Amino acid sequence: MLLPLTLISGAAAGLIWGGIPGLLKARLGVNEILTTVMMNQIALRLMNFLLRGPMLDPEHVAAGTSIPQSATLPESIWLTRLVPRTLFHSGAILAVLLALAVYFLLWRTTIGYRIRAVGLNPHASRYAGIPVAKYVTLSLALSGMLCGLAGAVEVLGVHHRMLEGLSGGYGFSGIVAALFGKLHPLGAIPASALFGALLVGADKMQRAVQVPSALAIALQGLVVLFVVSSDLYVRRRTRRRVGDDGSGEPDDGPPAAEGEKREAIAEV
Image 1 (cartoon, rainbow, N blue to C red):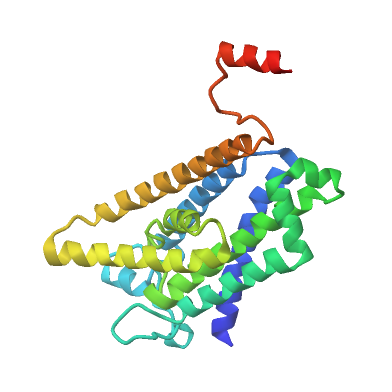
Image 2: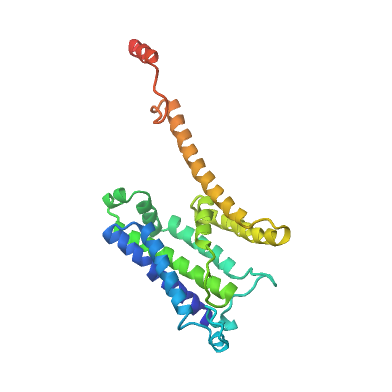
């Protein structure tokens, strides 16, 4: 029972922490990117304070080392390792199940439909009678809940204690994986597996053949660049095809020559 309670506690903490930017966005119109980044910094500084004070491992205090980390958690709440002598644990199964649950929520329920509608066009959603403020807050709170649960899984499955630098920048890697998966919960599953293998493989290559692991970070940046560029290219091609079909002149096409304009007027 202690393991589920620990996971629920992490999810609840993330729910509350993510709900604060949601309320600020819904009630005051504060940009959610700014508030979430600031909330991340607050959480980081608070964790560092706790790891250097109330949560500091008593064994390190007695030894006089004062390494900023907590005591090791009991083995009864560790996540099961699926492959011996690796870090591949049962949290991976939980992540896949959560991705499927998010897909079902967003595409198979009324709440999910309203969340997607508010995200696509809040003004039209408000005109249709959807309480925009409610669903903005709900979406950010649910996002925070998933992040809190992911943090709990990282602690229980890998480190088995709290320590500085816990996440290792996984949040930014998650953004890249989400973009590569076309911002779809099901697409995020193979994309996350791909980038997870990329990050682990980069560390292995650095130890084996001295290839810099920073190459993986550069590759992530290239993925973002190519994904965004491909979306822009597809939209431009779509507008041009609409213009070629006679349903409207493309927005970004070159203006017609003066001679062509005069011929068109003469034909009319």
